[in-house]
Every structure is written in C-alpha cells, then in structure tokens.
Length: 167
Image 1 (cartoon, rainbow, N blue to C red):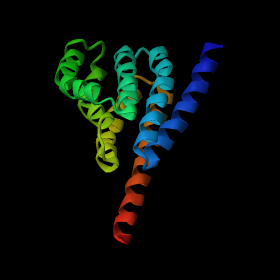
Image 2: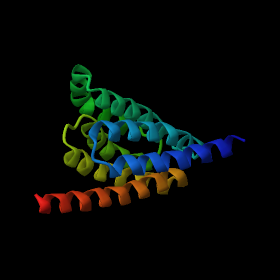
Image 3: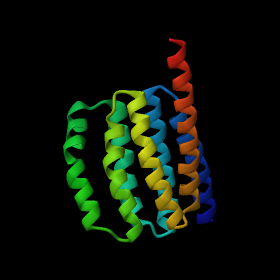
Image 4: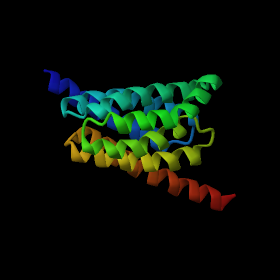
C-alpha cells in the first residue's frame, strides 16, 4: 500500500517538476517545483537517501518563501547558504551526499532569483547534481524527476533562445 502511494506521489512529482521547469512565470515555477519536491521526499526516504530527505524538506520551504517573496526570509536564505552547505558536508550520511553539497549552493540561489533565465540556469546545475544522487541511491522516481526536469529545462532554454531571436 505504501509503495503504491509513493509511486503515485512520484509520478505526480515528476509531472509537476517538468511543468515547473518548462514555464516562464517565476511564481508558478517556484510553487510547482516546491510542491514537486515535497512529493518526491517519500521516494528518497524509502531508498535510504536521508541526506536528500532533509535537504528536500528545506528546499521545498525555500521555494515557497521565494514564491511568496518574503524579502527578509529571502535575505536570511541567502546568508544561510554557506552554513547550510557546511552543515550538509559535515553531516553526510552517505558519500553520494557530496553531490547535494553542490546543489545546496545553487538551489537556494534559484529559490530567491527574480529572473527566470538565471533561476533556470542555477536549477540546471542543481538538477544534474540531484539526478546523479538519485541514480546512485537507486531512487528511480527521484531520478526520473530530475531527468524530465533536465529535459524541460532544455525545452525552456530553446524557447528562450527563440524568443530572444524574435526580439
């Protein structure tokens, strides 16, 4: 029963993440990605990726804060990045978590970004890091989450380039 629910949440997370990565609207992007991150947490947990579970919960919260544009909290996020990264590095539960230390720098910056292109550029680095982590711990829904997110980002950048040529 639990694995069926995790599978359902995984599929929903994959869809929401890809949709969020592909659209240009900054607030909708942050809300969709934040929600998708919440839905992928059970897959990471069931596959022993405790490092990813902790970081995902914080990242989802950061995306919601970024979407709601709480300026003081956004500033706190910006200043907490070095401490968050050091905490993750020192508290590694598995070696694969090293990939998440890189993501711990780019993802928070993406959550507070005010420019869609810059946000998606930061998310590209984060998505590759998270995808490799998910692959290494055999969290397949999380891996597909990042793979489709990566494809959606390529779509976004292609669309962005075409819009840039038109103007």
